Image: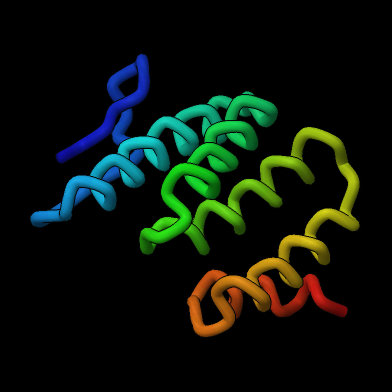
Length: 107
């Protein structure tokens, strides 16, 4: 399934079968991604937060944590949130690729 923004640009792609909760989480991730690409930082941060709360037992959690932190940083310019995001990833999803991507923020 392709998720397009209001201009018809592809913003998210979901391929293959997913159980209901994983599918719903990915749909929320798509909405957050659209907000992020449109530079609606607060909307993106809020929607990634919804994924973290509502779908915390899905594979979308680490990515949502990562992008919520980046959305916060983009909206506020406060770089300290990135370090906090990296620590949260180390606690909640230490083996994820998203935790590895955030390692530079720990310094």
